[in-house]
Image 1 (cartoon, rainbow, N blue to C red):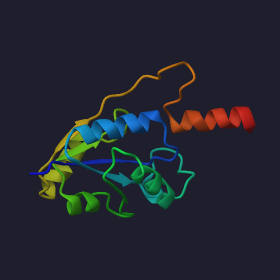
Image 2 (image 1 turned 60 degrees about the horizontal axis):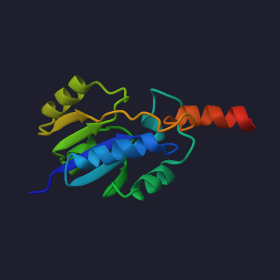
Image 3 (image 1 turned 90 degrees about the vertical axis):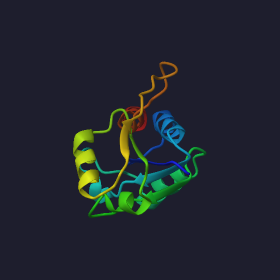
Image 4 (image 1 turned 120 degrees about the vertical axis):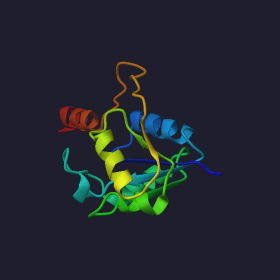
Length: 143
């Protein structure tokens, strides 16, 4: 039986921290689906710069990812219901409340576990593992 994992995020500017998260999520099962957030659902930080379809296509091109899809604009749990995963892998720094997610999954009859991926330290002083910090550096050097 195939063990299905869902990861999710904004993935505005892909960096090594994203790759680490998705590789770790993929290792939690046999198939990795990634839900790429729509701009309308990104309310915990500044809106993404890149269009949703572009972000989805870049994530879909990563080796660890079996399929990347766009999230639902009104109900973030609809793609989860459709995929019916065994595991939801959260990034180490994602704002999601694990208990809240588990309660909503139970309410909707979705039987899966929620796990947090580990963080990753920069491999050297120049490596940037944050979209916000990448943008800050671009503005500092070219703005």
